[in-house]
Length: 118
Image (cartoon, rainbow, N blue to C red; front, side, top):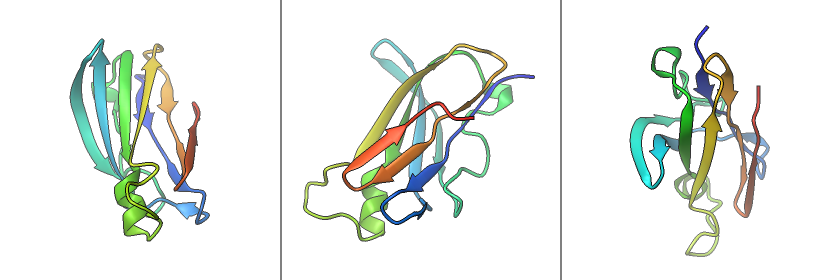
């Protein structure tokens, strides 16, 4: 089985999935990055398909950019300008060619966390 990449974004301030949050996936090498996918979360805070599906998966270093600021503005959680959080980048490596990598984001207007999920 080939590996693949998924995510899940939860709005911890509101206690619900983050619906409508844009995400861009890049493959990175040093200071160079190549855009691979642009997706948006659904009502469950997930993308409708893997961000990096099995047929496109390969090991390496990647970066997810979560457009938190746009989401926070759209949900009335924007506060003062400039926002404390706008774009949230997460750079990570995938070394197992057969693994399911899951990179969730727990988001609030003033903080976030992530981890390698399952």
